[in-house]
Each structure stands twice: as structure tokens, then as C-alpha cells.
Image (tube, rainbow, N blue to C red; front, side):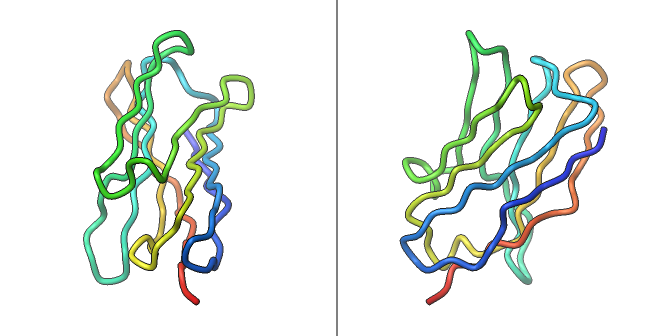
Length: 119
């Protein structure tokens, strides 16, 4: 599995960004795809996860991003998107995409995309 993130940028506080994770060969309904972030000098933390088919999608968020971030999946393009609104300086971090196989439990990581929130 190859994961490629994109969309990171420098944005002002209160702004928005849309991160994308493209997965090849693709994403199964049983897979868990997550966005993690790692601020400089700190440990990596889970931001949001998504799993399941269209009719029964399960999303989870860490408390600090609830009501501001939305994770979604495009079943045709095989991408997982993290829509980030009302960004704060503390959201600044390298953001990584992760996929856990629902069949093998193997885990893969992307190379990361940098998000910087600053005025």
C-alpha cells in the first residue's frame, strides 16, 4: 500500500485547509484510515479515523478537533480527506495518513504534509 498526502500549507489562524490522502491500490471497507499529527518536538497523536462502507461509515475524532475537522472518504478516487476549519496555532504539525488493513492488520504510513498556522 502506498499513501500520498497533500494539501499542507501555511495558513492564518481561523483559516481552513483540506488535506488529502491518496491510497493505492485502494481502500477496503474493512480498512481503518486515520490522520495523525506530530508537532515539532512532540509525539505523534491521532486526529481522526474513518472506516466502513458508505452506508455504515464510522468516524472518530480527538476532542481537540471535534466540530472543527471533518474526515471523509471518496470511494471512487480512493482518497481520504481531512477538512480542517477554524485552524489554531496549536494545530501546526506534520500531518500523516495511516492505513490499517482490515484483513491483515498491517499498517502503512504516508510521508506527511506540513501544516503551519501562524499570522
